[in-house]
Length: 196
Image 1 (spheres, one colour):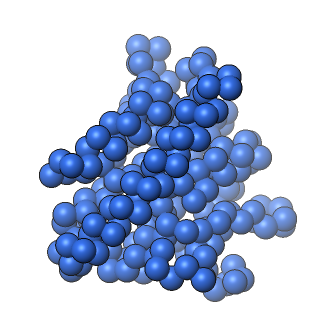
Image 2 (cartoon, one colour):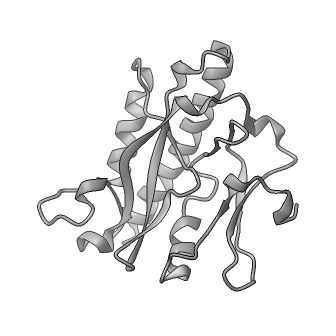
């Protein structure tokens, strides 16, 4: 699939990043582990790769797997995808190893006690039986750079019970897919931290 065939929501510019290679390395950790949402076509992609063309100033492209149509979810209204104000940050931002989750207004505050990502994911997983499960998604613009030093990932979330155009079965299918990805991410984060 060429870049020209990719929907614009799946082309993520790295032009504003001073440390592009650092941003690439950071976001690749989450490739295929956090679902990506495209508001233009109202789709969630759970099976995709991240492509970084060799051309200078090329955009990062999210490429859905064309052979896994069952991993693309349609008719996901953009009103059901909301900003969380939460960021996944590298531990270097807070002088610690690993990955952390922190609110937007506290990304660089000495008073903040960011939550280790594995604990944050455990809380997300624990919320799945509630009336408002936390289902994280990525969108274009969520890969950011803080003070030209550290890449970070902003999170959106899906309000799955507001997907009134979809059946309960379809809602559960989307929720299950996001949860499955979260569990794999939790295992990877735990494995990495145990080797530090």
